[in-house]
Length: 110
Image (cartoon, rainbow, N blue to C red):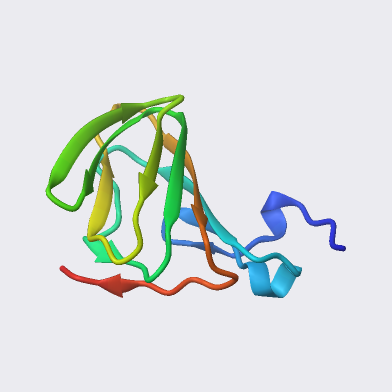
């Protein structure tokens, strides 16, 4: 068992990183705080990812589909599917992206 605080997680780019294998958990998570216009490049993972939009809005691309997502939106991204998001709002985008893996495995495509 571990008890940690969000500010104890490494912050890389626009996200705090919860790495499951270091915390004894079978999943990992990015806790995203993206500024307007910010987002990752097109990429994919060999496992399912679920993105929970907590605050703000984004445009997310999953495969050939593009959708606008607002607070309360949940997107299930299949394994090995190219995807990305960009904060299309004028406030900070807060998102929790759960990765079905105890460590992050990401292949950038762009």
